[in-house]
Amino acid sequence: MRSTSRVLAALDGRFRVVKAPGVDAPAAQEDPAVAATVSVMLRDIETRGMDAVLEYAAELDHWAGGEVELDAATIASSGERLPVDLREAIELGARRTRAFAEASRSHLVDFSTEPVPGLVTGVKYVPVGRVGAYLPAGRFPLTASAFMTVGVAKAAGVPEVVACTPPQPNGGANDAVLYAAACSGVDRVFVLGGVQALAAMAFGLLGDGPVDMLVGAGNAYVAEAKRRLFGRVAIDLLAGPSEVAVIADDTADPEVVAADLLGQAEHGPQSPAALVTTSAALAAAVVEAVERQLASLPTAWVAGPAWRDYGSVLVADDREVAATLMDDLAPEHLEIITADDDWYFERLRNYGSLFIGPWSTVAYSDKGMAGTNHVLPTAGGAKHSAGLSVGRFLKPLTYQRIAKTATHELADAVQVISASEGMAAHEATAAIRLAAIAPVVAR
Image 1 (spheres, rainbow, N blue to C red):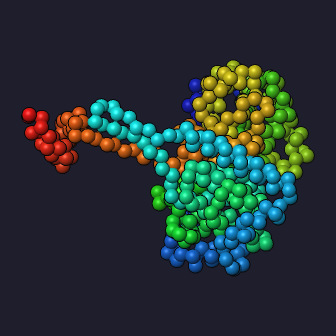
Image 2 (tube, rainbow, N blue to C red):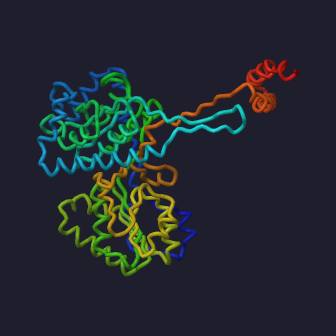
Image 3 (tube, rainbow, N blue to C red):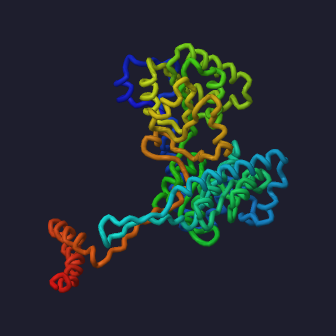
């Protein structure tokens, strides 16, 4: 999430920088060392199969042996090992995320159209056959990740969803992550982490064959593995460090803005957080509030460096400049806290997910309570891509049914174009059909 020099030059003199990132580099970039390591691991796993997977599991995840697949009873009983309030919150998040996905699915309908008599074309939505979901459980177990990946895939009608999650110090899965997967309808769960988990799913080493699609967040090694496996399998997207940006004016509460910026900076020391405001007074107040809140924040050890190195505050001359700056940033998560929320809602185009008004906060989506997906594009990807949704698990397959009576509507022009290209075989496929109806036309 960085401004581009072209846009900054065009707006020169119409905004000022109150706080710039301390590091002059993008938060997410391809690391050659990571790429080299992942490349070696993937080749090794593809060659040696599960022997290599288990060796990496022992080396990197301290796997101590035994079955890597969890049995149905362990999965089903995971909720019993959780506090009641956490269990109920997970169940709520699973239901809400599934409900939003099902509502989205209901708007993706098969259709057909007949542009000319005898030519019927259409689309049929067909779910992918098998999905592999990676469920992170490292520094911060992302409990809601299963809602967004497993649950949404199931809402799309995917027949089988397998999941991998890294082992905990006790050798088992994180029970909260596991229960979220169970509530989301997961079919099989394997206690494997990192590159070896993604490779095992993609190469067909777990269960009944290769997955068709890999989804889910992870560290730089997981992201690089997805990058290199793309093509062999589909992926959701290549996500970098979590991002948040806020557009606010003088009606916003600086304490709320500061809290929401730190809420995403907490994800990791490279997580960008940006404020674009039309109020110089609010900009100064937010900077002060961030420092004050960091002083008592238990996760200041991660949020503090993120704010220092990747935090920014810009003051725009007016709302049009603010919107232009924000569309250029194209943040993963975007909050609007202004007196003109509806204007910004209509004007803004580039964001992963939008949070409108002072009562909306990214954390509500992060934890599954809003129902929307938190697997979203980062590093400017929102300029050209959307986040994970039920539609990503569906293939909109086109078809055509052409009657004899429509032959002239298609074949004549196909002959002309094919002849101009020199593609004689294409031309012949049309000509043979025209010849077949010529006697009928002659009568």
